[in-house]
Amino acid sequence: MEYLYSKLKTLERPDTPLTEDERLRAVRGPLLHWYDNNRRILPWREEPEAYKVWISEIMLQQTRVEAVKPYFARFMEALPDVISLAAADEETLLKLWEGLGYYSRARNLKKAAQVIVDEHGGVMPDSYDKLLKLPGIGSYTAGAISSIAFGIPEPAVDGNVLRVISRLLADRGDITKAGTKKRYELLIRDNMDRERAGDYNQALIELGAIVCIPAGKPLCGECPMNSLCLALKGELTDVIPVKAPKKPRRIEEKTIFLLEWEDKAAIRKRSGKGLLASLYEFPNIPGHAGEEELSEVLGLPKEDILASERLPDSVHIFSHVEWHMTGYRVKMAKEHPELFHMVKKEEIFSKYPLPNAFGVYTKALM
Image (cartoon, rainbow, N blue to C red; front, top):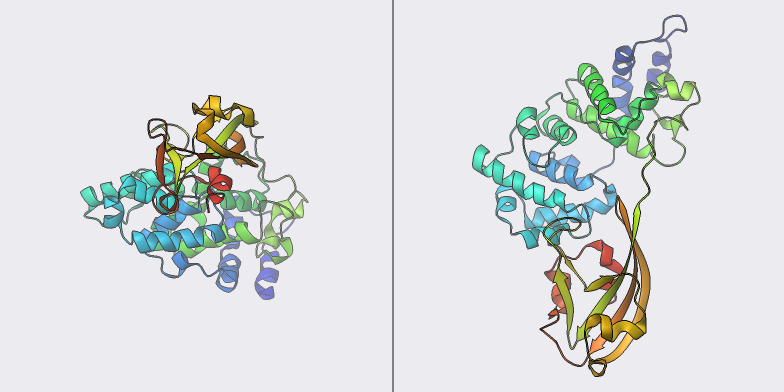
């Protein structure tokens, strides 16, 4: 390994700096050598069948690897192939996805599976362009599937790769802009290892995940690219990559109600559009209600409230909004089916998909 790194140092002279293409080609060997010796053992990586790669890549968007592992195992057990995914009912699918967030991803999986069944005989297409036409599959996912599962030399540029390449080239382009991503895709497509396309893409992703990390100081001493990294050379790793500041999130206050009668609790289905579409939730109202207001806001006679208890406050952060929640547990004297949809508590855990946003209150039912 040290030999490879020292050999790299001889490639670049102060009077003849490498071009971007030369720099990317120069790191291929050390990068793949590092990956062979340092890659994590992951269930979807050891058997890179197209369906498994697809499901794992969609799950890994906005979600940590360790968090994805149990979801992936559960999903594969319930829906082991494209045909079973295409036939799954929405509530079963969303229950399997419960806790991963960004539920449109799960719905797009089903839509894409139906297209694969209808137009490709239930077999994942082995073409980058055909994959790109499927619902929910963009250039990154199409590149990951085609390279990892089929060995097609197409780039898979995610946030990790954007960070690695921007530092390698000391590029100050805003990595949140589509133009920067497109430029890197073109550079990588021209200069990637064509014999090990899947490993090359995974090596860049892995390097960004565990060495050229997104938060904190990058572990440059462990990086196989360090001798050619222009950001390291220029002491710019704290300012590159460049990202435009995010807009502040909108804050919404809510009061959540755990309404219980015997072995049942109240839930309701959210709208089919917008945030957390078609998932279930506990009854709630905008704003923070006081305990003295429970009868009025719930529309319950005071004598039908046997007991009430304040539950812990909770904050849940979405990409553009924060929910700041207070909660109450309310024991009711009657079921009141005209007001609330009551289900057995055990079904809330086994059948109805509730998002993690209500996690504090869901746990209170246990």
